[in-house]
Image (tube, rainbow, N blue to C red; front, side, top):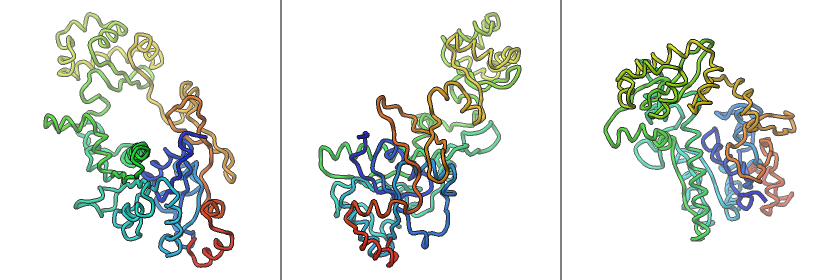
Length: 390
């Protein structure tokens, strides 16, 4: 028994935000049933990428897969039968799509009052943009992230990962778990929903509250921390390194490690406030010393002194790092067609719990097995297939 194995999740999600949400549940043992349209009515690969590619394999692991045509009356009827026995449904259609299909919360809760529906949209379930198609980069731009990313004066820059998709998925998973906990007390489910835009604005965190509290519009700071000095990227004798030294005590450690006690007596470097006001001078002072030795040597010295510092890795270097290797983040899974595929495990560690290692299913791989659990006989299944319902 894994922590979430008592819950059955019907997964209608596609692309990334929804699958990211469901993966949080699947990785801890939830009985996730991935529902896709039959191949003959869904011929394109869509934005999810190649089924055997890294992206698809990563987001859809630890699920069983079935095909079901929700646009066919018998397919929709079968889905409703499954809802009656399920705990959670997750979808990331545009808001009007689920209404047209009849799988909105009011319809599902009428079948099963305990059901929790998780929904992710581009811009919210209501409002002037509700029916707009959503995409990660659009949310990055509208949520403010691109305005603070990149070098000063460079212009807006997209972040290198689909952060709005990923965080919308994470927030929805958290909301689903909260709703399931509440259901233990009330016996009733709840509709949990967020959007790429809401998730992105929330992820702006202190940058957002700099505006909401003080009406400060944050600007691009490049590789420097927007408020903490010195924190940023520095050249060394053989490359680059990151250093984070906010606060007076951390500054004193940097001064001692770099041997710049005399220069640090300048009033421009005396306090956090003065260093922030003189960011360029502060960084230039550190840069003049750091470029006299290698990244490896400085990182060792600074960490020994208790100053956060580290290298700047490309992805191959990330997975070669001894700490990353020790943590076992690269996560091998056996796939019947691909052999061993190395995915990335969930970053949480529950002591004594080993997450499942089920590979991403082929389309409809478990249709007969799963539907049998919901009372569909082999004869009924054959008839449903002949109708195009599954």
